[in-house]
Length: 135
Length: 99
Image (tube, rainbow over all chains, first blue to last red; front, top):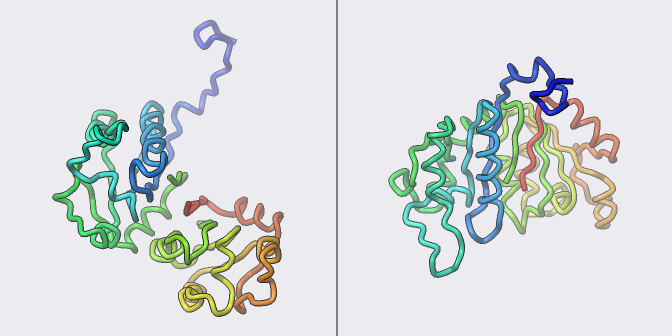
C-alpha cells in the first residue's frame, strides 16, 4: 500500500499494456444517445494511452456530417468534438465506403479527415482489434 | 472473431452490415429477434446460406423456441444453449455486438 495511490495497489504490468480498441459507431446523432455516449467513452479511453480506432458505418457516418446546427432542437451540438480528437492523439478515423455512398455523402461532407475503407478492409480492421465496443 | 446480432433482419440493418463486414472464418451468433434470420422462408435466407459457406452461423435455441420457430430452422445452422453461448465467447479472440 502506498500513499501516492491512496492505498490502491497498482499493478506493475498494467501501465505498459497497450491494446487495440475500436469504437464502432452505427447510429445517427441526436435521434438516440449512442453517438454522444460513444464520444464520451472515446475521450475517456484517450486518458489510458491505448491504440484507439474509431469506425463510422451505416447511419454512424451521419455523426461526421458538416454543418450540424442544433440550436433549434435545443440539444448540444457535439460534432466539433470530433475535430478535437486529434489533440488527444486519437487520429485513426475510418468510414465504411458503402455506408457513406448509400447516404449520398463524400469525404468533402465530413468535418474531419477520415480513411475510407471498403467492406473487406473494414472486416480486416475489426479482426485485428483486441476490444471492439459498439455504439 | 465472434459477431453477435440481436435484431430482426427485417426491422434493422444490423445483420446486413455484419454480413458485409465480417471476415471469412468468423462465427456469427444470432440471439433474441435476430433468430428469425435463420428460419426458412425469411427474406434473408439466401444471404444467411451464402454466409454459411465461409462462416459458422449459430443461433440461440431458447430464443428460437420462445418464438415458436424451432421447427423451421435452416439446415446447417448450429443451435446453442446459454452455456454454448458462453463457450463461444470464451473461445473467441474478440467479440463484437451489432447493436
